[in-house]
Image (cartoon, rainbow, N blue to C red):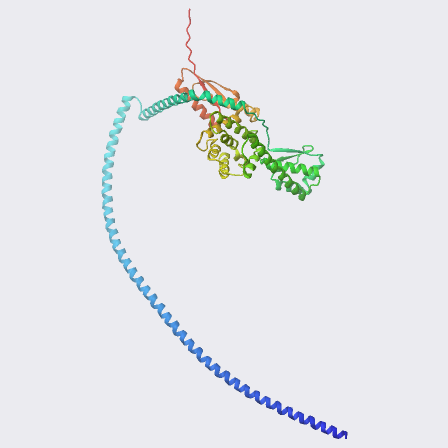
Length: 515
């Protein structure tokens, strides 16, 4: 029974295998047929595509050929046009060459004629020169002097006569003007001076910072000098650590930077912690303090003069003048004084006192930045005022107070006069005794260098020079010329504040004796 089951199973398996084989072979046959059909279809499509591409390529080739032929024909036409143009130019050049040849021949003939005429003129010129020389010799014998001597004498005579006549006319004009204006001008100036007063301080280019002890110098310098180098690079001020006991020196021409450096160093010394990061912090704080003091100084100055508030930029420039000096005179105090003087004189003359006060106050505003900007402080200040929409009268007063620009309004002259008054009064500007003596000696030396001067005296602290001349060598007209010449030479050779008056004295004495 088991064998029968096994036999039946085996037969079933065998039949199943045969069925599978038959099905597989049937599918393979179908696949082969499909493959053959697919290949045939692909071949036919490929041939069709090939024919289409060939046709497109032929069409493209025809188009390219046609385009090339068109371009060729066009270039050929251009070349032929160029050939015709070149032929035309060559023809024109040939005609021009013929014309040039003709002109050249004409010029040669003209040149030949000129040479013949020049030769004739030269021969006549030689004859004329001989005649002139003979006539000149005859005239020199008659006059008793050479031609050059006669020309020189005539020039000197005419020049001296013209100078004297001009000086006489100038003196008449001056006397007429002084007669009417001198009294009132003196009155205005005296009243302005009486109503103005200011304290002035002298500042230098160094600031001394005290130290609690000499050991602090090492901490200021830092390891391998890193602290002092960092401090100098941030402030732009040189820090001098020398043998001075318990002190260091800050040196620099910029007074604002020097003040920032001084405050920052004092804070560092007081704090005791000195290192690069702390240095940066203290310098930043000091910069803010100095900026606040600048604005405060500007506000106090405008309040003192009773002027309207300026904008932020102008207030910064005005306050910066607190740290500037000129000949030892503080510029901000000098500007306040010039503002007062200008306003007072303008009021006395019936002009706009506020406008004059504003112009005088701002006349040196350019000194706030003239160390960093090219140009004179007057022109720099005028540009600042113009940029900040100041009145044209104020701008002109600023740029003309050293006569670099022509004055357009009387207020400009008042500002110039007030500037001279403030700068030249005694005590306004510091100077050493040695410089003072040298200036006095130089004034007398310049005056004595002129012919006809007998004695010279520098008086009023060098503000006036009195020159006594020989009465028999210099007359009244020549005295006026001598005063102008001495003043011009002083102006060219000396540097001084304000102005110097030159007075020439000529005295005639007639003496008789009763016996």
